[in-house]
Length: 438
Ligand code: CMX
Image (cartoon, rainbow, N blue to C red; front, side):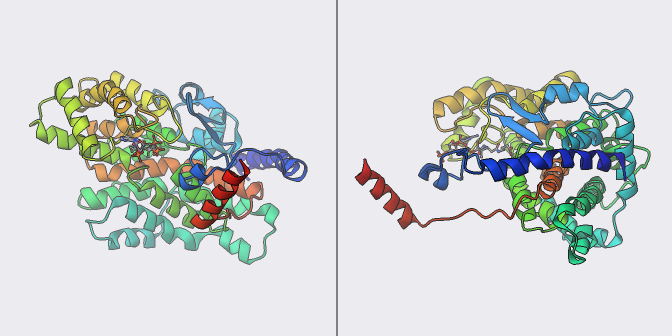
């Protein structure tokens, strides 16, 4: 057994009695109130899921296993000379809750390396898509194709005990996560580089290897590590995380679940917003004939977008009520490495002008930038200008957190998710009863 799996098993054995006790002895304790507004309003804010892997505080932003993002970037071990930590170290932390040592990270790097080869048929699935296909659709299909490799399915059919479901799920998760960078880079080469795919370098860590396959030089390896880490998890209620959890709750394998997660991430209100930001900025750039707009011109562009009934991509959030710390980490990187980039000047100006406009507009509960307001411009700076591809990068990162969650769902024997729905008439009847009773 690998050291990661051994540590995980210890943690699972420690944790199980806590969940069992809550369920058996305190199952009736009330956590939240379900109102009509929550039912119709997309269950916004309804406390209805459990995860220990990350927690999103509206003011402070995300914590992974209790650590803020600055702490993660400070404390997780880094490759020699690098600015961003090992992605493999973050995966270890997400799964076990412990900060890994260098030796523990080396083990995860070895685990990923031995599993990273893609079967031939996956390349064929990718190749079969027309070049005009959206990258996220190809990515989702390539992941789905791997379902035939699922050890969980094999062992489930052989009659494995529920207590052991987590074990083949863990194996499937590692087999999938280690293949995602190769899949992403291959899709990129197919769509934008005439199929000239660069082979993996087995001596590199996940972020370094991805940068290499994208044909990039340092510090893009640090950009890759930073991206995968920043996008890894955002507690359980966001569309991609919730979709992954929901599908996995039917005991669908990791490949089916993560493919579904990718489909949710591909929506413009969620992961696709990072490419929307770039599309929107390119539109402005074209209008300006390449000249950096003045603050007044930028304000006008923002108002024109709002007045056309559209959202400002990269701003607002369903939970956050402050600037997203994932935005701040990227801003700090940009200030250090690419302050002079013209697009950074656009993003920087938006940071100043959008929040007061959204406040004046009076709709958005959170006028501050989210992760997507910054991520596309950094990719653009390093020559990854094909912005349709950006959400694939988000997806590679997000798979780290969602697979970790699914392994834990199975370890803690979480059941099939099955909320109850009502009809509009039933809600109206409830209102009548409440009015009469008042
Ligand atoms: N620009 C304009 N209007 C906005 C807005 C924005 N950036 N953000 C929210 N609003 C509007 C909503 O459309 C809604 O309008 P109506 O009342 O007319 O329906 C109103 O403000 C209230 O919305 P909210 O409660 O503040 O936000 P929601 O929880 O409904 O939605 C989100 C959150 C992210 C979908 C929304 O802020 C948005 O559309 N932002 C732009 C897209 C984006 O950046 N998405 C990436 C999110 C990051 C992630 O994926 O994690």
